[in-house]
Image (tube, rainbow, N blue to C red; front, side, top):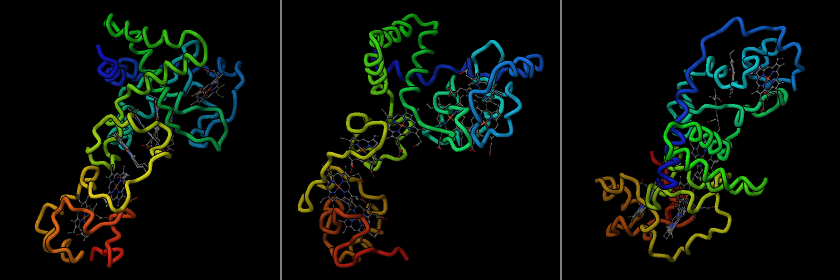
Length: 258
Ligand code: HEC
Ligand code: HEC
Ligand code: HEC
Ligand code: HEC
Ligand code: HEC
Ligand code: HEC
Ligand code: HEC
């Protein structure tokens, strides 16, 4: 199975673990948790739970996620938004939502490698031998110490299907394909070494898709008139646009849409 095809599965797996645990009063034993010191103050969002350790912890079991899900399973905004829809199946929470760091801590951080690590763990537990083999192969890269582990995660990260979560912010409107990681990292979209082609370029349409209105009556009746280029064809972006901003029409400046 190819790296990319298999990692598509990373996200699909884990539904089993995310099934909310039934509420068990027996386990919400205050005494058990009072024996443990809290490692630190909770985040402001969870301050109300400071005296209820068992809201998030199940004595003797590591599974924090099941507790989180009891309260957060139905966050519509989260599940319906493309980049965060993975919350429907992800099986662990603490990597991106750490706790006990005080009231000023960030509640959410996006850790793409954690996402890969969680997916790999799922694959290793999978019933499908081929999937387990794949997971072992990636994990083996991490066998030789910290930097090799980082390499394993970097390999996994590169195999994430970026467009599945980020197509909505693609400013290239699909013209550059869906392999975002060919050009982008996971920390910031900016590509610091990138230099835009010069303003005298005539290849604008190779890298830019015009808005739908340019393929309608609007183009002849408004756009071409505003730009005073009645004969320019849509592909000739350079006739009417500059490279500074799409809304910086030569001789007009910022065009105000009524
Ligand atoms: C809102 C959920 C929440 C509540 C309430 C909560 N914790 Fe935690 N706790 C967590 C999370 C999440 C972690 C993992 C933190 C991390 O990895 O940064 C954690 C980690 C810990 C750890 C370290 C061991 C481990 O599993 O990583 C201890 C010990 C702990 N909590 C004790 C407590 C005690 C005692 C209380 C009650 C005073 C408490 N917690 C209340 C969410 C919670
Ligand atoms: C007993 C219910 C309960 C549990 C258990 C719980 N939460 Fe929460 N959580 C809340 C409430 C209530 C808020 C505040 C929501 C708000 O202000 O709209 C909150 C806020 C949050 C926020 C920030 C959302 C915001 O609006 O700022 C995140 C992220 C979050 N929880 C994740 C987790 C994770 C991860 C766990 C498990 C470690 C967890 N929660 C456990 C009830 C819970
Ligand atoms: C790989 C990282 C990652 C994992 C794992 C993860 N989350 Fe999140 N989560 C995020 C990010 C990033 C956001 C903020 C998204 C945004 O603001 O658009 C978020 C947002 C949330 C919010 C809404 C916070 C808000 O501001 O409204 C809740 C609730 C939440 N996560 C709960 C969970 C629970 C429960 C789990 C475990 C089942 C979990 N998350 C696992 C990355 C993660
Ligand atoms: C399972 C969903 C998912 C996948 C797959 C994914 N991301 Fe993300 N990514 C997120 C979430 C959630 C955030 C934080 C919230 C946001 O910015 O939308 C984020 C944030 C980012 C950011 C930071 C954005 C900013 O402005 O701070 C970059 C850059 C990024 N991702 C790039 C990538 C790349 C490149 C890939 C492929 C290697 C990728 N992501 C794969 C969900 C995903
Ligand atoms: C062939 C290389 C290439 C591919 C593939 C590619 N991009 Fe880009 N992208 C760029 C370059 C170059 C820039 C300009 C970066 C800059 O100015 O720092 C850019 C800019 C961006 C920006 C705006 C950054 C900013 O600072 O405003 C976002 C968001 C973005 N790309 C998302 C994506 C997404 C999502 C995908 C995949 C669906 C993708 N890109 C695929 C090369 C690429
Ligand atoms: C080789 C590819 C390429 C060519 C050719 C190209 N561009 Fe770009 N252009 C990009 C990338 C990548 C970005 C950054 C991502 C984005 O905003 O679309 C960008 C950004 C822009 C922006 C947005 C600036 C902003 O921040 O709002 C404008 C306007 C623009 N280009 C106009 C042009 C024009 C006009 C031409 C022709 C004279 C042209 N481009 C030729 C790749 C190209
Ligand atoms: C004949 C002149 C002309 C040509 C050719 C042209 N445009 Fe435009 N375009 C305009 C004018 C005028 C506007 C602003 C008014 C409007 O929306 O009609 C505009 C608006 C836009 C906007 C929306 C700006 C905003 O912020 O709403 C984008 C994006 C854009 N053009 C991209 C392109 C691209 C890409 C091409 C080439 C493939 C192109 N245009 C070709 C005249 C032109």
